[in-house]
Length: 260
Length: 288
Image 1 (spheres, chains in turn orange, purple):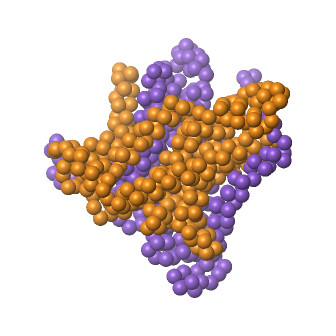
Image 2 (cartoon, rainbow over the protein chains, first blue to last red):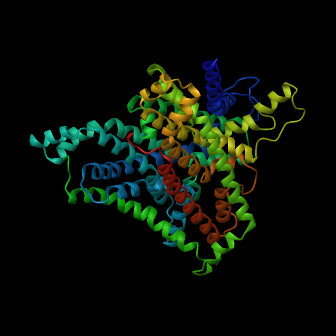
Image 3 (cartoon, rainbow over the protein chains, first blue to last red):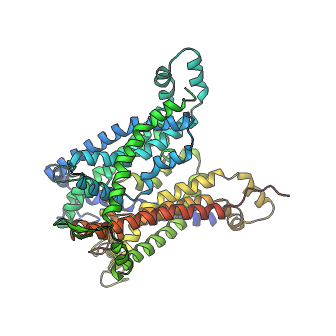
């Protein structure tokens, strides 16, 4: 009886968690001009329609470029900072760690706004530079968290052995530390990529017509039309999330990556 | 390499700290600076410094109404996420190894799926012609659709969906740290499952509850996409009000003051709830 009750509760909760994704994915195949669920008949034409719209495709390229470049810039920064924190003997280590994770505490609307104000006051309003800088900022704490967590788990004895055997710090890092770090780092990079790719509240203030991102262009498209092409794009985003989830689970464990 | 010298660790930390200073520190200084200016920002005819933006806001009924609404919704969202989080967390910490990966992928999926995509899912579910209203009308329970979409209720549903994984992760971390022998001992001594939960597991989960509540509440009050897509039209949440002040009204001084207040509240929530959690956590005392 007790087990049955627990089973029913879990089934209801799983329905709640999966409902919006399943519903939007199924309604992307509907033939009707407006979003409906369940669809009466099925078609792929909304995918063709969405993929032929430059406002979606160019925004998707922008988002991809933004997510890849901000993760690529944040990765070496995060590795260096995590090494300093976990392997260095710095006074006030806890304070430094808090500062590194600070972008997580500041609401992202506030970050977007503050960067907009500073760049307009300093006469620095080149669209893509400040957008990339802002995305580096929000991706960084996730990378620092996963990288320093893997460094803490990594036995420093192996590094010490390499040094004793005559390897210099660079060789030790490249051949001993980095391979041990790789799964956690890779998981952090994938998670950072998706954090940047899906971000709305920072890009909202910093993107312009030329650097418009995919989530932003979806949001403005929906203000005027609610046809299944948004569901088609959303379904592609859901597929990307699914691939990411499976990859994270394989590399480092989803729970460890997201909850470290 | 195990222990880097002070010099090399400072050198390794420097680029990141510089980046944080330039991309976060300096902008926050300008945010504070703009929040003390009043006047016409379009014509760049502004005066300051003054605290009038703040004093005006704290006596402005409309602003206080929206701020209060943001608080009430975020509070309810956090409580609901806590209640729903426990069964999921206990499932995750007890599930057999073979089931753990699929369960983790389902439960944590809202973290990885674009919020915009799941919001559109809620539009299809909650709309007047949506899944819920059609089902209720099909069953003959209601004659006309009930308004669910574009309400505070819809904001709440969307936010619970997004913050639930964070609550579950915090609770699982706490549950996993509890020695299974403790609850076994309580059961052996005659406690039923409810008593074990109430007297043993729940108090030991306080640190996890604290972490989860802090995360969920601060994520809720600073959410933008969910209120913008699912909420009533017009400014309906503190974040959408800030956006409106900037983009539509060109009230940069007032908007900056609102954003700075949001930042202060978010920081106070993290610090305050952290302290409260430490105070409420069962002390690690040895029995006399």
